[in-house]
Length: 233
Image (tube, rainbow, N blue to C red; front, side, top):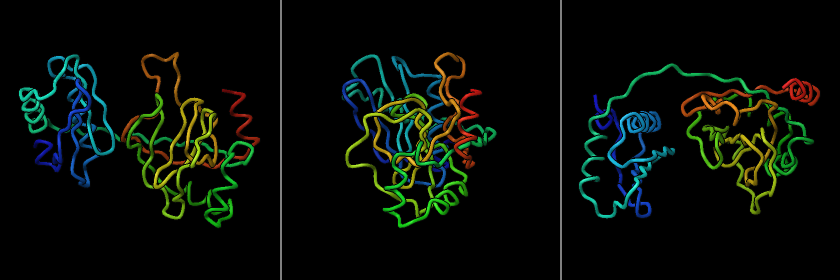
């Protein structure tokens, strides 16, 4: 069964600069899984001159080594590939990630609690009760976008991003949780930090611990547990 038959419907194909196309897909229940299946197919069997494939939550961007503006041959080739590709089932990987929700490690936690009129115990209970899905990686190598925050934890991004967010920071914005794989500037609201190293430059075969469509649950730990795990790591 092709991806179109399974529910991956194209909304539009747009030029993204001179050398890339972005395919936008109509919302369906299986859209995210199908986008990543299509991405895997393009990576395994790229079209001529294709040098990169970038999946997102609602779209897929194809990058070419040459200008493709108004190139109907490539447009038709993309449509043919979308229509023909098959989805392959793979086992879901579930990661349990320890998080310390202590204000010493979560600079935005007091402001988030005030904005939500919530006690920290309630926030921790809600945030650790959900099984999240990794919808995509981006912004930074290994930065994980996790879907399905509890609706009561919906907060806006910061009006002014922080210049320094520590690696391992766990942050929320809208209906998503993000995990900072490395230290960087950032605009999400940091509510905790994990002692785990989720991105490692020195592991070329598998530098990222999380991958799209993986599942994540958070486990609350104390500050002492965090410091102990961090020192062991």
